Image: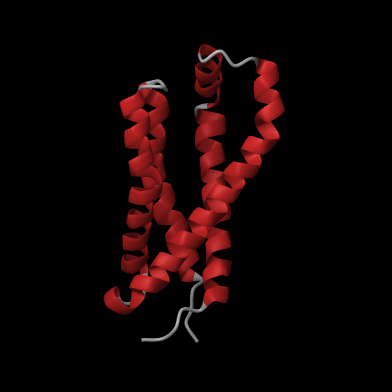
Length: 145
């Protein structure tokens, strides 16, 4: 059982995070953008408030995506000795990441009923595929010395 190659975890994780960030931009910006705007207006946010906070929001989403990508590839590297290298192990790591990063927060969001059901359910489903694909791509770049 070798040591984790941290440089490769970071490299694969950053690639996975960028990929996840692109997927999230498509889902939340392109597909659900108008729904998010309507939901925020319903909460009493003004267009000016949303515009003012947009850069901070984008920075945090970018950071979240990069950290999630790194976490997914680290998880792959950590379980690789038990499950063996390859796509099946990367898929397991991606599903575990999805459970922690998406399922649990989605359950809380759904329970609070703060957002319309569409804004909870669509990301819940799409993030399943995002986490698996991003983790598999990042894991593909991971190699142990």
